[in-house]
Image 1 (spheres, helix red, strand yellow):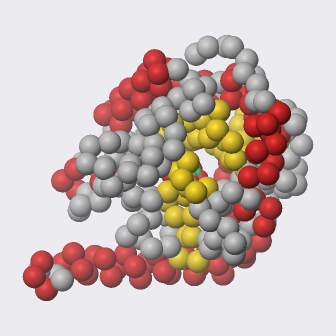
Image 2 (cartoon, protein in one colour):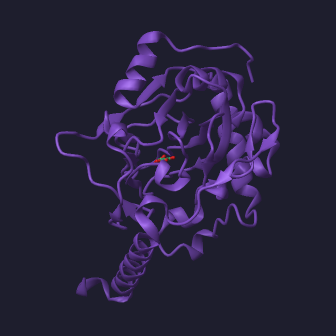
Length: 291
Ligand SMILES: O=C(O)CCC(=O)C(=O)O
């Protein structure tokens, strides 16, 4: 990885403050993204990692390609290369510009999103991370070109100022996650097309998500990390330990419970997930002509 220090322009920082997101074009080279892609395809080929990655053999997926290519959770906890990608100096430099302070890494994930995969319904990351004061920030590194055909990202500009909303159940035929938030009146989701190597930085309270990958042959892989400012006092303990960019593990206070929406909200989402899953399973059992 290159150690060249990148910084964002004042226009980019202003755009981030106004819209809740900004793209750093070509932050990683084509060679680097190809290398990172190959690395995660090798991890997929090597099979399950208990608690973090459980790909099923194709014959057990029941038509859901995401069961064969689920997202990888927290690879930095057991894979040194992922830790290095998450703590890349170029990401640190841009994140420091956007946070205006030193930064701690909280989470890494890898999305394969192969052709036919569902998307992730509109949501706000700080609903899960529960960072206070303030919010978290994502760095979304495109490992393939990502656009509307293969399930690229959508962002609702300016929605970070509306605060965290309580979600309602998502449509599980389009989303692999169970919750969705409404777009605030007068706002619109806009597509955010990226080239491999671009990094989309977004505020943890901005509404964002993605739709299914409708392409025939194009994966939409992304390495996604979440970060918090050094001054964070509390957040959900599921993300501990945090890491400094020198690689030191560090924790803050726990912000427990169901967050601002309460635990009833989580129960509602889980019940809807169960009901929708049972309905989809029942539909699959019916003969094709009866559908
Ligand atoms: O990559 C996607 O499709 C969605 C990712 C996302 O929303 C997130 O990381 O919070």
